[in-house]
Image (cartoon, rainbow, N blue to C red):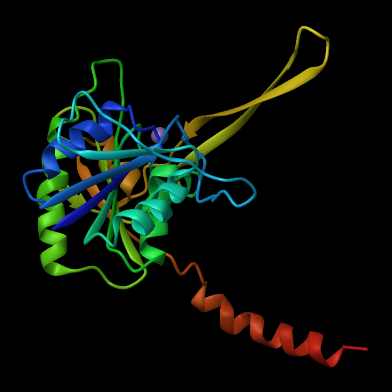
Length: 255
Ligand code: MN
């Protein structure tokens, strides 16, 4: 099995190193293609107005694993990884430092790498770990990812569907499947002044989650690892029919 790994925390993040070590056991070939610097919250953007570099990178922690850094986004990494390294059997993105839940997945570069692979018809899994005050321990999530990859490559994924996996802090009480929640970040814009007296803005946010039943947010905050299947097709099937008469009306009113 050929596995392509990427992330949005950057090629030197311990999360992708732990993931690489773990999936080495189930793969014939592991290829890492990741951003040269952190790209968290870059979403699914790709770089089209400037050239990109694809640079062989020796990772001291991972001797024997082929790795490349890209001066672009996670989606760029997947595009170049597939172009240069060939089509993998599966793409795994992560392990992200911090959860990717609910609506926040639309900002996530970790999930975007998996989205990019899905658009290319490659089965894809995004892995994220909830963080707290203690030291980060990727071991459980990494070993779980390796087992999940084996199961998924055997079972397959529906077309245009990817898996978003989130781990709680500490050893999970179990593994659940869940829906996407409405978890998001409450925008917080801080206005400050630079040394020249010109204002600048710092956009951040505070997590905002409602404990809806059977959702990714509720599972992770209750101490469970959880797998959410996400579809690329965002079409609202129900509203499509309701919208149809409005389109007809607009057609009739056409001058
Ligand atoms: Mn990140």
